[in-house]
Every structure is written in C-alpha cells, then in structure tokens.
Length: 409
Ligand SMILES: Cc1cc2nc3c(=O)[nH]c(=O)nc-3n(C[C@H](O)[C@H](O)[C@H](O)COP(=O)(O)OP(=O)(O)OC[C@H]3O[C@@H](n4cnc5c(N)ncnc54)[C@H](O)[C@@H]3O)c2cc1C
Image (cartoon, rainbow, N blue to C red):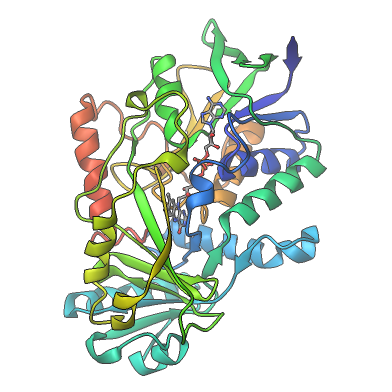
C-alpha cells in the first residue's frame, strides 16, 4: 500500500509533534507523523520538563523567553492546559566563583529583557522551606520560569496538530528513507510505503541509526540522564519553584508532594544505539543508583532534609548531547528534501516550540527567522572524523554543563 504526504515526520516525540503542529499552522496541511511506538513514549515521557530562561546565549535566552510567553497564552488560544507550571525558579550559588558568575549572568539577562533579580537566601527559603541557607551565598530569582509536564505538553501539541489536519500513525516504525538522484522520494515503514518529497528526522537518539543507513553522521551522542522522585514530604509548597544548584550539578522541582531530583554526574554513561536490541525502548534504559548518591552528596549542605527522604520512583533516558551543548537542526546538504532535528542536550522540552518553529520556517520559507548558525547541523564540518573524539567532547559537555554555564537548565 502506498500513501502520500507533503511532509513525513519520523518520530512522534515532543519534537515530532511540535514540528507537525508548526508546519500545519504555517499552512502545510498534508503532514504525516510516523512513530515506532506510542506518541511521546521516548525520552519525552521521562523528562523533568524544566523551562529556564536564565541562559548564557542571547539566542537561547530570548528564544526561551518567547516560549514562556507562548506557553502562558496556550490555554487561552487553544482551550486546553499545556501542562506549563509557572512556579518561578531559583539558581543558587554555593561558592564565591559561582556568585560572580551568577551576578554577571543576571546583569546580562536583565539587559536582554528578562525579569530576574538577586534575592537574599532567607527570601529564597520562604519559597523553598527545605533550603538550609547557611551554605548559600547568592540566589537568582526568575518569577516567570517553571516546568512543563512533558507528556501533557507533547499531547497538547499533537492534538493541536491533528485539529489542523495532521495525520499520526503510531506502531509504525520507519524502516528506510528512499532517495533518487540526491532527492527524497519517500519513506518505507513496517506498514507500507509513503511517497513524499520532504522528510524530517526527529527520532532523538535513534538519529544515529537513520543517519548510518544513509551514510550520514550527526555529531551527537546519546548519554544517559536520570532523575528520582521522593515520597511526599512536609514543607513542600505545591507551588515550590524549580531550584538549580550548579555547584552540585543538580536541579529540583516539586512533584506530587515530594521533590524531583535530577542532575549531571561527573562520569556519564554514553550509549550507541547500534549496540542495543532493535526492540529497545527508552524505559529500558539501565539505571544507576550510585548517580543519585553522588548528586545527593552535593546537596548535603543546602538541602539536608533530602538526605533521609525515601525515593519512590526513578526515570532514565537517553537524551542526545552535542560537543557544544547546542541543538543540531537543519537541512541535510547532500540530500534534497531531508531535514533533521536532534542533539537536544536535555533541553528538548523547553526547546520543543522552537524546534517546531525553526524546522517549519526552514521547510516553508527556506530560512529560519533567527540566525541558527550556532545550531546548524553542519557546523562541526569534518572536525569529528573519529567517534572517540566526539564522545569525549559530548561527555565533557554533559559532565560540566553547569560549570561551563551553557545554561542547560
Ligand atoms: C531524565 C531526563 C530528564 C530531562 N529533563 C529535561 C528538562 O528538565 N527539560 C528539558 O527541556 N528536557 C529534558 N530532558 C530532555 C527531553 O526529554 C528531550 O530533549 C526531549 O524529549 C526530546 O524530544 P524528541 O522528540 O527529540 O525525542 P524522543 O522523545 O526520544 O522522541 C523520539 C521518538 O522517535 C521515535 N522513533 C525512533 N526511531 C523511529 C523510527 N525508525 N520510526 C518511527 N519512530 C521512531 C521514538 O519511538 C520516539 O518516540 C530530559 C530527559 C531525561 C531522560
């Protein structure tokens, strides 16, 4: 059976759903999403969903500010809750070096128009009663930050796309992209062929496999990222802000009466999708409790109460990291009609509306509204001839994300 579509999106995670919605919103109605499992069943469902605007790059700061604005208006526009919880965020400095960095970051972000201020640790404690202020040297407060419940947001994007005519086929793995004389002609799936001139690869860590089948390499490595949730605890306000503790490489947010704890360990574990079974699903990502012990140790001074908190749940997934912490998006130069979006750097929930907008602009208008040279698919050129060097640089970004202050969360 051969179907046809104007654009086929491979991958029904939050990026695939967002790309589909933005294309349909731009008037491309004949869009088909193919997903090997269920929508949002990959990394999307595992994420903490933090949406932070205090960032090191102007492009990302301004872009995430625009995302926050759109998320806060979503309910009024679409008549449904996108799962955005605008609880504000605190970024703590526990060392003198971090205080200077935080002060510089706050001043820079204010210049870009973000409402952010330095507040006294005691004022931070009012918002987060669990916080022990003794070791805290400075706090930045961003009242409009928050987190998005990832599944809820992905489903809101999927429903908005469907209302505009997008078709979505789950349990439909794409098995090949067909190409004739350097141009995309279609997608083969387990349930038949689809003829199309434009394909978007939005398969998260699986981009490695699709790339290899086409003789392409995307400069990104899947690295395991984990989080844990405590049992409900006294003293956790329902509207507790997101807390980032860069000196401990940890982030916290409220989760059904308890605290969600995630972070970036110093010796991350990378994966190669080709080494995993073809049936691998993200929920099967192996967990490592020692990572929680490492991250928890960094929180001893600022959050002593968390040391004894019972953990009731953990999540793990394989977000893709790049050597500079920026997304990888754009058109594949050697194959006309082929676009890819990967390298989420554990920022793909916050960035989902941007990715959708950027890919849609690339396809519909031929160029994006922002200068995306820092996010370009091709920006590393032939620098990573060896996978070993790519792995080392991506691992270094993961392990030093806060230290390098790329502003990951
Ligand atoms: C523990 C954890 C915490 C995180 N916290 C945050 C956070 O606080 N903030 C944030 O912004 N981000 C966070 N992230 C990252 C976030 O989850 C990702 O950036 C985001 O989900 C990327 O979405 P995606 O659609 O690209 O990938 P995915 O959600 O992985 O979706 C890819 C989809 O492609 C499908 N697929 C694969 N191969 C095929 C094929 N051949 N045919 C059809 N379909 C295919 C898969 O089944 C999957 O559904 C976190 C991630 C983890 C694991």
